[in-house]
Amino acid sequence: MPRTQSHPQLAYSLTDPLPNAKTPVVFVSGMGGVQAAWLLALRHFSSTRQALSYDHRGLGVSEYSPEPMEMVDYAADLVRLLDEVGIEQADFVGLSFGGRVLQELALGWPHRIRKLVLGGTSCGGVGHIPGDYAAVAAMLRGPELSEEEWLGLVIPAMFGRRYREAEETKMKNLARWWSRHPPDPRGLALQGAAYQRFDTSDRLQNIPHPTLILHGTDDRLSPGSNALYLVQHLPNARLHWLPEVGHSPNAEDPVRFHKEIQDFLDEAD
Image (cartoon, rainbow, N blue to C red; front, top):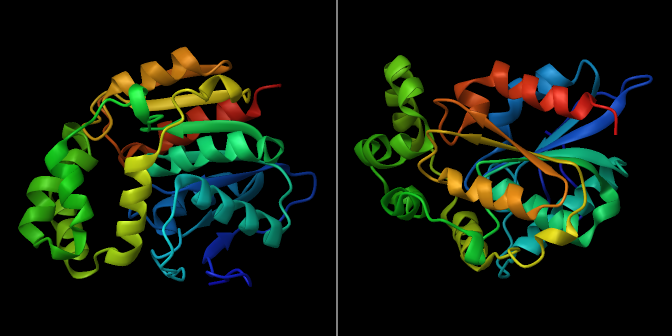
């Protein structure tokens, strides 16, 4: 797996460039998430455009660095990755923590963005409506959690009821895997601190990019009120609800998730 030459090194996956390809698309993961979660998305979009995913510093197989991080620093990490792979401008899709990173990217480096897709996220500050406290606290304790705690505390908040009931065996297997391969606690702690301090609530009006807000109606980690606040305060945004979907639309309903993104990105500016 390739990594950036600059440090801390970021591991990434980049599909091959295509002749006459559309604007590249970049996928940004949530807290504790890794690029493997975007495998289906890269496969889907790589037929028409170059697609990029990566691991945040201190997570997956990216390098850890101990200095404190703000959300804007994660956006700066993304910029140096774009510079190294030669992507000047792209469309961006971010879920949860990734959506927060993209808000800072849009504010600090607006010329790098054509269109934005924000899923299951918020702007922090006065515009943030907290979700399941117990699940968030458990996620930040990730390496300490037992298989039972992953299954009982985190998975019900990460996935909607319909998906959990249809994929009961998969949920148990996932809880077992997470208990044996938890996120690096150092990288997770950096993300958690940046998450707590993040606030773009008074700067949303400065994000002019066409923005699609995708939000599951069964999202317990980020209640739907967060999506309503974003669409009311971003000057060029629209909201699309994903019925009976929780906090992980890329896993719960990838066909619909990809279609909504593709339709939006393919629209004329």
